Figure 1 (cartoon, rainbow, N blue to C red):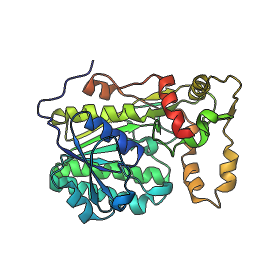
Figure 2: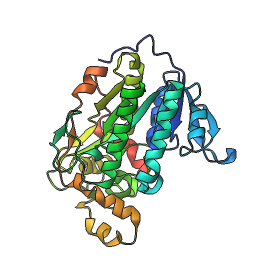
Figure 3: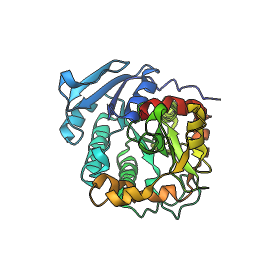
Amino acid sequence: MTHPASPSSTPGVALVLGLTGAIGEAIAQALVRRGWQIRALTRRPADKRPSFAFPVEWQAGDALDPASVAEAARGATLIVHGVNPPGYQRWREDGLPMLANTIAAAKSARATILFPANVYVFSAAAPALVSERAPRVTTTRKGQVRLEMEMMLERASRLDGVRVIALRSGDFFGPGVIHSWFTQAMAKGGRAAKVIRALARPGTAHAWAFVPDLAEAFARLVDRREELPTFTLAHFAGHTDRTGRDLPEAVRRVLGRADVPIKPFPWFTLWLGAPFMPFLREALEMNWLWKTSLALDNSRLLRLIGEEPHTPLDEAVKASLAAAA
């Protein structure tokens, strides 16, 4: 059962940083269904801005510019930090300053930050099922940056009273999720795929998050934000591929073509290209997640909102294949 929204959680203005990204748009949609007004920051000129199925109040500016973010956050009740450095690079150079700007703006506007956290803060030494209490011990550069980001939010919450709602999840898939392991590797070509790639080592569990479900979970936490601790971190279980083949087999099932083979992903091609392509080097740094079982314990989330939004796997795959075309 889902708990009702708190009477004190009246919708207002939500500033979405990264609205053109999959998670930013999905959270915006979930908030709009509840009556929230969406504001977005963009560097694009007016004639280059995308259209959405809901009204957007655009403000010109850059998430790397503190003044732009502060001005955009004026009068906002929520700030969705859905922006990431482009091209899977410059995590430290751009990612940390952007979050610092969000924190400063939230402090000034007395807004709550929504932060999509991930599993990069763990390592191959983590337990197969991780709760929010699991030690965050990372062995990668991106993991260290993500850990620093979480610590920045915790510190701002503890010292300055900045309210934070963070949800940790696995790899994204879903409509609008263009740059992902699902679209670029497992089901490349979408409905026209000639081969389905199993990314994980056989028998290795891997966490996936269907983005519309994750966004709805964020929105349900927002509904109850006045009752939450100043800093709230919860785990979103999503869809756990328990065997390394559950998701590839679901793709084949949804395609309805039993002749499409499921083959191991050729990781060696990434190693060959890594010396020449920075993106591949960055992707390979997280290779451990496909060799080590890692699932997310959502017990705390269940205590907070009653149940986790969960689209059946085949339905989620069907909605995701269009993005993989």
